[in-house]
Length: 208
Length: 201
Image 1 (cartoon, rainbow over the protein chains, first blue to last red):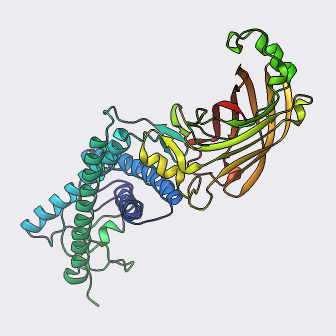
Image 2 (image 1 turned 135 degrees about the vertical axis):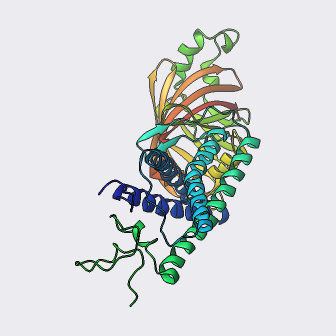
Image 3 (image 1 turned 30 degrees about the horizontal axis):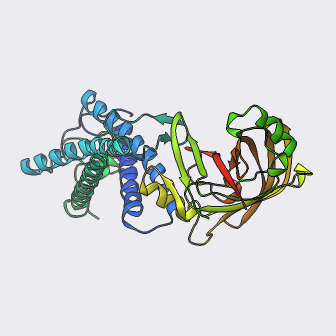
């Protein structure tokens, strides 16, 4: 069940979703501590390096996520969604995937144009070269601002995305959230709880 | 008292070495100077130059800088070079590098902690001649409240009746002084390259 089906997400998609989600939230938190709070300068330096390594990880995962989306079937939208909701959901998802790529890229640009020229030593294992961009204080300020703005937009969209998921789960009581938690197929139309008692085979969860 | 420069300096050479070195050094001036003139007490001149560099992973680049405020004295013992001595004090607050952010970082608690440790000092414990114009100086280096024995290589470069000049090089591991920040991106070894001029007192 690694791959998506018409009716549900496979393990690969689900793993990518949650791994990127956790990394992005952690990176935003780290970014906040690195930049907005007076902290011990040695700790700050370390945080920057961890932030870069995890950021490059997100970049790689996001690139893979995009490829995966291009080659994989996308499950049909939940039938509980109206056309507008469907469009809004699709726009949000595509934006989040794009941002998962753009935010790390803008971070890479900061590192590359910074006159500090601090190497990116990915988890102290391999050197990731700087992008071929001219170094200057002005460029660094620009990319730092772009990186922060894109990150805040990402955070906002994540909040919208999560709120929508909880809304579906708690109010609509459908399987929108569940299907990103459990790989497996899901009938397009309503059904009943199957023999095993699992409820991920129904579009609308059984009310308790 | 103050001047460009960097770190710990120890300098003292046997007069006999000076004689040999100077014999072939035009800068030594006129006719063979009286060797006895080199023995004596010197103050480290502010025109001295104390530079350091720290390599980075991948080879090129790294951190480079200098110190502009330092002071020190040394004594060349004319009878026994091994009894020559040096005392050197460096003020890390005066660190200069390629940009302000790096200087502030070097002054901060991450590196020199200049607010709490105003000076870095070196006091020689022994000098030994290694060649006609070279010597090594061992001594105690104290930084951030930690003291360790370190060694510097000295080469005589110039000498006149009133002053004497050396290049001094040393590779100092920074981790024992609590300056581990940035490793392994930046080397644990700080390379010191100093041109020290002593003015006879």
